[in-house]
Image (cartoon, one colour):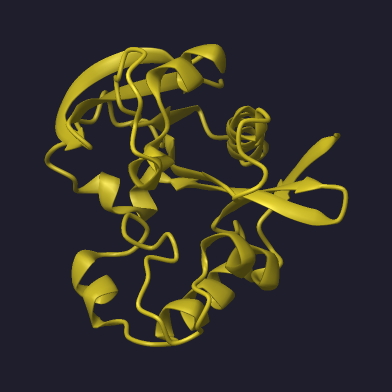
Length: 190
């Protein structure tokens, strides 16, 4: 298995990982942290997919995708923090005013989990941010020790995943996911 991580410019591949089975279903599409809450709440039916389709055509696109050959197997949302709700989030502190990027969702498709793809996705997100001259990249994983995280809430990543990618804890947060505290982890790129 050779995993390649690429910018998320192919809408159909993004939809295969984060989209619903029915185009009009009201699911996240990984927009909850990407756009303001009011805008997110106003989207209904196929509006979410339409917005993601537009984001895939923007520079930078909304994240990165992992491929095993021609098969898309995973997704990581990564973007400048200033363009996300983390710019205004009261539970996730700002370490400084640097123009950092945020990675907030890592998702591996069923049938491909447990093969280290999340590690490839996080490394790809770091490379992607670096290619846009980001001075640093942050993530907000759970600090779960070795306790199991519910699969539906594991999208934020774990401290261990970010530790292995070279990130360091930069701050505590007041955010909690699945009963675990989230921490701010950061990797300097400049």
